[in-house]
Image 1: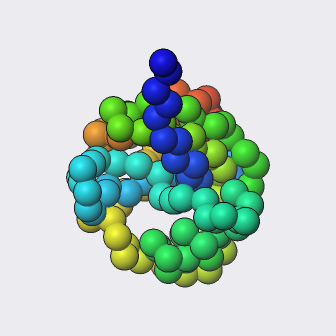
Image 2: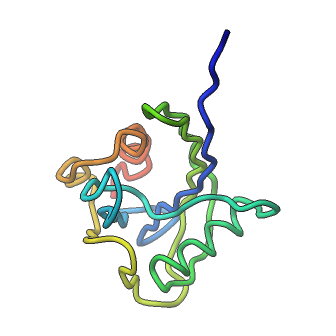
Length: 139
């Protein structure tokens, strides 16, 4: 008998200073739960009937009091945590309006290619860092 883990479908915003040539990306440290203090890209669960882009805009509005422009899709991370499977669609994004107010996170940083590994990433988010390093080449 195969026991299937619950899959949680989420979206994440790779908020950057310039979607065409990102030099800095925005990361947050979780302010609650089992992974409190670990770093991630902001976003959250996709609700029934929502597109990934709609979910991402809603989540960033709720978590950061910010409106974003969503750019291109970067990658889908598939990661098995002990109690669930995470499927996370990641998109480049830029701030359109708002000041990135931390409503749920305990900290935030703008990271450059040289500082990407200075924070302790959640395991799923860590798998995206090598991809982002390539995105940030030469910036």
